[in-house]
Length: 480
Image (tube, rainbow, N blue to C red; front, side, top):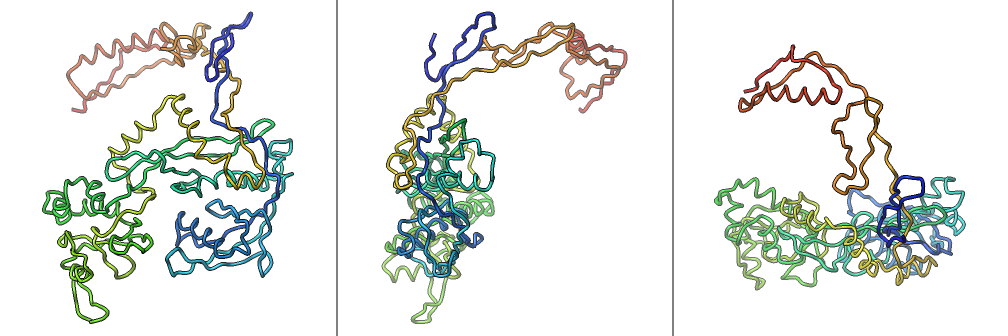
């Protein structure tokens, strides 16, 4: 009897016990062709204490855009320490160069140092699934890293994607989550060695992202208040909650959040560096032109932006001195939420993530277009090709060893009865080596039950299992 892909069947063998075997679909795609070109491997040095993952990607991209004579075609980057180029980069000082790069719309210079550390040729890539797999561990790891970066570059560079470690999140088919957040589908890809070939393992993940929208509205939803007036009372401590608890939640939501500005639409998104626990009506500063002291509310009113909530005792801080009311800001799209996940959101994540195998397979099959395997310029230029169908492999369930018992008996795990799969039936069975007990100590936490009767019944069960003892020495202690 032939089995359908994805199913295991019980197939009796002549003279043998029933064997569970068949063909299953696995979440792997075959690498049908490896890169045909050599790649130059560069170490990337950046001060990681001052920049995050998103900034590292942006700086590397800007570096290549600003130096087209060196980076043409552009190199590929793993988001950390490795950069690979299909041609040797022509530096003025040999194999090392430092580039000073600014963020988009910024002025601060960030130095990036590239150093050539080696080359990876097609022969080394072919060795990944050959007899030389165990030789030269560093070369093997570098080759695997190169293949992973080639696979991941196209989806990471596509519009609406966010890097999350070695996975990426996509803004296709997002779902709203409680507390001003939303769920983004994510995909993880990893090159794995298999007998005689390489395969690409593809799996799903779920990302929690700030919802794009008005900062005040989303913050109110995160805190759990109905309107701005209630938010004002909660922050000031007149709404029943402890102000410290509410302020902690506000910091958790706002700190480091990148926002755009309603009153300055041509300014690039900026990250909130701190919180000012004052209202726009009471917080003052000295105006540069006149030198007079004015409030933040007065300043924006002079710019034709009359505030709706001048008494809200919270503003966002940018840099050392700039204070901006929250009502003038919107959350920039595509930011991973890294704070403590609220309980309601955890429940929703669990509900969405829990799927049957064929539901998950359907999600993976629908995701293939988002992975850009057939349209990626990085794969095309390197000559690398990936299969379009998830692999089918022959499989069988290994029979577990029998459990040896007393009286020279044994019991096997149930594989036929679906209600008892993976369970041993220990009814009327004795253990292999039974100890004898001479003293029994019982700690009683309630007087509702007949403790002595319970103990007697427990000892009777032990005796059927070959464990012997008596009631001659029983100590009962009360905790009540």
